[in-house]
Image: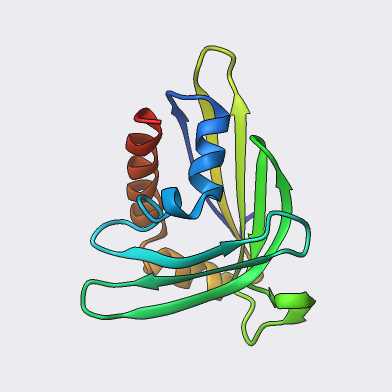
Length: 152
């Protein structure tokens, strides 16, 4: 981690496999990914290096934000890394904003250390992400994730 990284970390009462499912199965991801009343739809994740990662974030007032990118790393039950720096087939995007970095560590007692980072290329992007509500939003989404996996 560096000075251009925003991070949340918590212990979640479930196995890494359940969190992995919530991050990689579109129907589950739709239930928790955005802090409500926001939601995501049209999720595609090709879980391999260079695989397509797309979704549309939707707001309560009709806001629509398409998100297109690539998977950089997908290690089941351990690590999911993705970016908006590239689109399909390693074509550079119009604006590289961040690299998302999700780490899952099995603590051996039925709990998982969940670490979610957003790495940025520059201070301006990081500050923009903070002002967009990174900590509040990503923590609310993690609360929703934790509630979902408790029922899996």
